[in-house]
Amino acid sequence: MKGLSKSRYTAFCQCPKNLWLKVYRPEEATIDAGVEARFEQGNMVGDLAMGLFGDFVEVTAKNEDGSLNLAAMVEKTKQEMERGTENICEASFTYDRDHAVENVLLDSDKPLFHTWKESHYCAVDILRKNGDGWDIYEVKSSSFPEFDGQEAKLEKYAPDIAYQKWVLTQCGVKVKGTYLVCLNSDYVRCGELDLQKLFAVIDMKELVENEYQKVSSNVIRAVKIINRDKEPELDLSEHCAKPYKCAFLDYCKRQHGIPEDKPTVFDLYRMSFKKALDYYHNGQILFDDLSSVKLNDKQQMQIEATQTGREFINPDGIRKFLEKLTYPLYFLDFETMQDAVPQYDGAKVYAQITFQYSLHIKEMPDRIRVTDGPRPLRMKVGKHAIHKEYLAPSDGSDPRRALAEQLCKDIPKDACTLAYNKMFECGRIRELASLYPDLSDHLLNIADHIVDLIDPFRAGDYYVPAMGGSFSIKSVLPALFPDEPSLNYHNLDERCQNGGDAMTIFPRIKDMEPEEAAASREALLRYCELDTWAMVKVWEKLKEMAGII
Image (cartoon, rainbow, N blue to C red):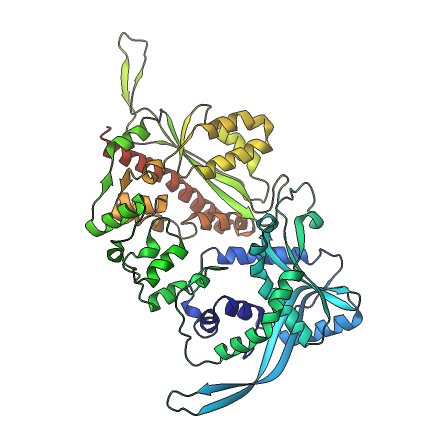
């Protein structure tokens, strides 16, 4: 296809090189693990939005191999428009034109002109009849509060809609209105799904009109890019991460001499991409290049540790942290799923629905148990911890109430509970407390007594070079225990080796065959168990570094 589609046009608007790579070297893209899940969520939102304005006709047509039959979709759209159908979903249009572009060959100074037929295509999510014209409704699975009063955050959707308006206008369609349909995260589900409250409709007229003026020239430039034999030479800039992180960023970084096997300015702790670019453009890429740069304490520590191999350990700071803890210790980790469309009463869009937890409990290492005899019995508990776990049924029912009840049984009031990056666990517990007033007192008590195991690392009291500027458990654990296979997440069942896997797999289990469902549940249990056992091991390592036996 020599012309453009919506995705090609928006790729060009972000970066011409992005478009060229998308067409000719798609294998160089780095695909985020959560892309597929987000795509599925987007499809669900799009399907629901079709019914936003009542009855509709969807014109989607497919070939035998499952690919879209664009010609059939365009023809069906034309037929539905002639019938006066009020709402047409996936309304499809192609604008064909002959095009010529000048090309200078490498071995000649004589320009040649290449001519071909362009075919510019777009599908409108919802094309709605409006008097003697039509309105375009672009559906996104983003949530409304993100845009509330912030026009800058709406701008990234304007090129997409403006391109659609341009194609339709070239096809002789009178476009009267341009709108963005997104999720309204103020909506709380209660009973049946209410589409009118679930979706927010935003008038994009002004933003689209400003962007529309650029479309014709952008199309010409984009077509030239597609028909280039050579990859465009463009340096790294803010467009690599704005408005979206480019899938080809790693590829382009390699092209511009940024090594993958050495730490660079882009790997520094809490270094913004924009600031890292400033250093990059000054030729300050490797850690050795940053000696004259003023960095914060943790960034300086990261560089020194990397260059010298030094471990930064502050026993006094670690000891102060450990002194805050009281036995028995409860190590807690949650797993959640996140639905764009709320599935349960009391849930908002993109609510974190907690369906699982793991809990390791460490008693006092050496305690006294009074017996009936004249002497007390001194009992060693040993290195092992009690393990408890909860995984909700995989039948599609709301998992939260039963989980909250079991959590209250497993963690008593006033217990010292540890979580890693506790804001997540505290947030989920407070959400459960607001949902279930009869459990609220106990749940809030648990949340109020959670201590964050990340604190001594974030404070700089314990840092080793292998952490690579990150204090996440997935970075700290292998840095502290590089040679323990039992603590390696990659040795888990491949069905579930990270939180993204857990979030994705749980809602799918209800549709699996029994054997696969059982294996998936077991994979979830072992993954979550490792999360809390990892915390136990990290806590033990902290005690060792502080000289506490």
